[in-house]
Length: 314
Length: 314
Image (spheres, each protein chain N blue to C red):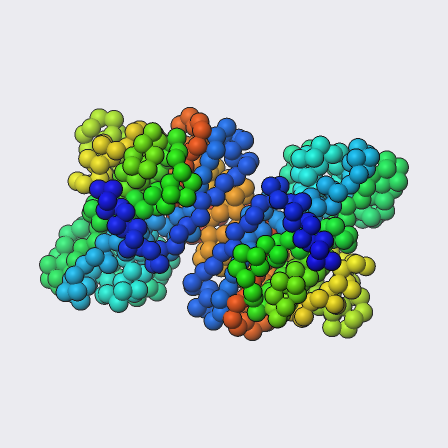
């Protein structure tokens, strides 16, 4: 699987941003470790999701590309698929609930995607996407449970290891487990003694439970502010990868997620969305005990005015 | 004067952050030029002011350092002097009005400075600072009108030219003119055809008027959101330097300053204070016509919750 991440990195060369790794003396002193922040909030579309979308869509055959791609998402993956479609001149269809935030819908439409709405009370996005897939011959690019998507997401950690060398610990937000499993695979190869830890909100701790019990758990619409982690469960592909490559899973409270977003805002001058700040939240809450060289993937920076206002004033 | 900037750069080596230069495809397309953002919001204390404070204080004699330094400022310069004092183990005294924001006062105290308050209605900060200077033998480190401070501020532009090469235009926020004159001197040496343009809020256009009339104008407490530019006027040293080295001065409205801060937040995921966003504001409003390679100094990122909330919701 690591070879696929290496191949993905070559494919992304010149298309994805080589995002910077930032440091903060203040935080190093506070936490008592050397912290390295991989800034995927500065990736195209504002999140690591561009990597997986580009890596998967760019590998489709000419015939598949001519028919177009489809996905279901109301978040960063939707924007990533839409942008890649625009870049490669491929038609993209995004299935979104009729209660998706207007800003996310607009951003996705601005990249030229066709939005198909469904009634979030009565319909399932997977069913609608699957029906359209069959009817139009679209290729499905799922948000995480796809080997090319996972390989793409693993390039962020790979780049970080190539830039800064070995780590003692790597903290990665976990939603559906695409970024987490890709990162863990890169870590095992690039820095074999590095402990990779997945971080989830307490309110959406399905993957943590699944990891510890080795039985797949799920959650439904968890009310966490970290919207990127509201996925129902790990996937058929990501669950075994997480069990094999990830060393531990920890959870953090909503309060400390908010604290982490504020810390990044005021001290590091970075806009990071709540899901993207989970790694720092785990350090601030001491959910993980950091020592030595610690990598933190800031997975995205797409946050709307209302959420940021709430956070800044809480 | 350029030699002093080069010397300052050596002095700052290992103490100041070598701040990154960032780019945005979206903005390049929107503006129709190649934009390079020098991220002084990621400098220590969150603003370029660290450069001038360190360059001046580190050159004091042992005897001067033993007596301590003093300055008057309620903003980024105060924090910069306080941090440099802490780093070099020098006592720092900051004269602040009794209506200075609590957050700025706290940040300055956290670096170990002694705050001397004055009644903003009845007293002048310069008089109080000057009295303390005489009584205790402190050395005054003024916010901008000092050659070592100006030389320090000029290192930000120097670093940018060394990293990215020549520019056609350089946009620099203007308060008291320390950053602007230092940047213009670096530009003339490093990229002789580069046009350096100072940007001010319309509401605080004293330097623009002074530049165009060659007579020093002043403003008193201008009600601009860009608090870093609320200085009364250019200084005895900065005014002639601005006249000699700066190519033009332009102003921007409060509305477009707010738009620029939002753009940096949502599109570039950077926290930039209103004064720091003046260069981008001039591009967005077409106050300057950008062509070719354009450098923009994002001078700082210190913004409080209330101001950011106002901006995000306007």
